[in-house]
Image 1: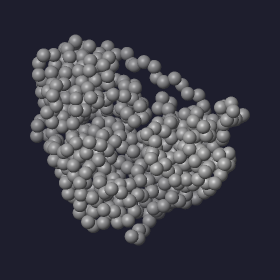
Image 2: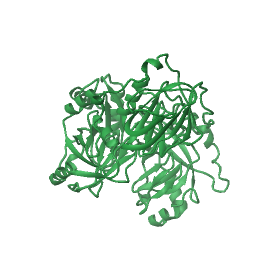
Image 3: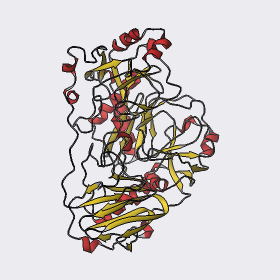
Image 4: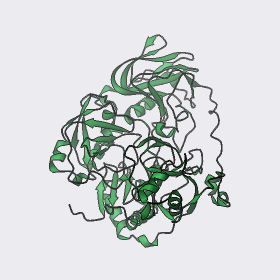
Length: 554
């Protein structure tokens, strides 16, 4: 199918993907960064994050501030004035690497594939000056242009379950850097001791898209940096401070007696870092957390608890208000059963216990004052794959203590307030989810597009990263993969098996499967409360309809 570039394609009701082509090409990537630079100085009303990728730019905006027509017009105006050749060169960052051995377990295999010796692979890999095309997949993961063609090597047939932070990999014609521990299928030829991601720093990422990179081999006999290299590392990453120590002192707190199945601290989410591979995280069901916060007198974005399947037991050290919204659980404060979707007064020393789950998957507990843990990258949201945010980046466990922020003086007057039943989401084990078609709908056959509107079952492989569905196959026209581009919460990717995957709160910020549609924000809570075995349908709507639904649910 012929396509005219660039293309401005909807990615839900709050983002556009601007595609400059469909191939790995440094000239396309320079156009991406030129548009990104142009938008960074543009006064477009409601413009949010941008995520540059190999050949496209994801542009997010606030649909409550701006509209589809205005943003599209602004993008067309910026495209008309692009000067890709005027882009300044990025910083030059020299990265020391220990090649081979335990640090580079695939070095010898790469050498054998390329008909080279390991030392020749190292020499070739350290000769070029690379350029960071994009960051994505995981926080700080850098994709680099510039790998010598002689070193091109296929990915591993079976990906590793864990690749260590700092690993330097080769996959096809690309080389890349793992900033955190993740699964991965790239051939690992070395590892750097240089911290590529540290959320405790003011500048947590060592590399930015557009930076230039030189790899420098470490002395294999002493395992030290070659002379002079340490002096040339960026100041922001040369010395690593100790992690934030202790928790903020607070008069009031919640003490965890039992952690439940999976209970994490979440606030409205972590925004502004998607271009570095950091997902928004935050609540799977944003409506429920906002409602609970409103009932106890907090701001809507205050941190609370996301409770999955089996609830925790907590003890309040001081009087407070709580509200639990979302999934329905039996709930007690002390010996008294209390209702969900209500503000409930808790005396000092009383216990809050969750009993049997009645419906839904996730409940949200807000407490007056909010949970006052330290923030990471501007948010208290827990991101489990990255081990940051919330309480030490993990789920709660017995013995944890959660400090609370200052409470108002209106606990007694707020107690007993309820969220109207008529204003709650229409949770169901068989919801119909409205979607905005695209951005890559033209990658699917007419039969595949029709099949997408059938019923799908939620599989047990669903989690905070994505909901994997099973049902009628969504057939591709030809290509089952695309050059990685930006992903938003709600994006529906379709891999080669034709089974949709809906990207959720902890989704990868870039992906290489075509996206057939995006679940609208107003309906994400319905999906978040689905369990394995529940069934969903998709119904296409316009961007205007999606934005009206968002306004009605806000």
